[in-house]
Length: 442
Image (cartoon, rainbow, N blue to C red; front, side, top):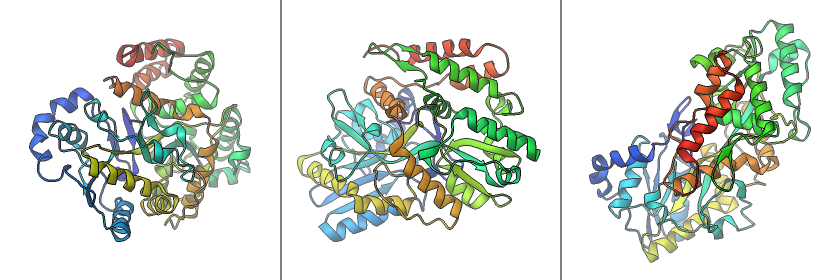
């Protein structure tokens, strides 16, 4: 469930970048922050007072502020919300563990082996059927203990320039129950490009996560480990990646995104691109920034698998600091994930929920944004379990003291798109990189 690498996050503001600090860097930063951990913002809670650490930009903590105030009114328990700047947050958690000063509850970006053995088991919350939490996105250890539950989830998804589609007279699906294949989508996008004179059919984030989503939808598993921890790629993955590389022909897709880091979002927002493969975090930005054309979020393709690459926006954990505080933390987390409170959190903070069956009312004035969130909420329960594979894999790596500090996907596929090597050779190099960094057993 950890977010190793780079992921855009609504929490950090529009266009913000969230990076998980490699474990070695966390340790190296330790001495600089040790004194801050003992400053009174750490642990030491009891049955009536808990400390809750989060890291988010001002204003986007509104949901948590609302819930902790409500919890105090209902129970008398004071949950002290501490919003810590993201830069240094993983290191502060790391050093809080060393100083025996962990908070009682936290929304964390990643697990750290130094404190993973102090986590409460959240199985009772996760397995409560009334919560309807999607089990594909939980972080568990080898014994089945639930180490964390997402505060919210993010997913890859597809956006179109609806104005161009209508101008070209080309239809598109509106329901995930009747979605299109990648082949059908690319054919439609190319037709729109040709009829309207748009520059490109599709821009596609330079992101391993976005590529994984496409591969999953085309029946592959991308870079996948067997029971011994050895990584490989299957035939469907090779076919999908070769297809993707071939799309980068400076007509269907611009080569510059994956070879030189051109901004695919800016290209799409210019109005001169038919579609954009990105994710749910774009919705709040597009709701305000796109004025020159109508845009829409449309169902993700399935060829033949309905899937995405789903990540946690944050990982909710409880720490076993002492008996009274641990019991109180467990009760607070159970209360948070009850559908009534969790819906309030989702609506107020603009989250995509990890719970199914909710009907959140988001504060967007943009009809396109409201429709986009409705679509994502309809799609996620339909996604195949492979959608949560990478999140689960990252948890296992962290628990073994490993991390994928450099995903070779972007570099190696950039070379393939540039004609410097074949797509199959790029996959060989990517597999080698995974095996070197996170392969094998403990």
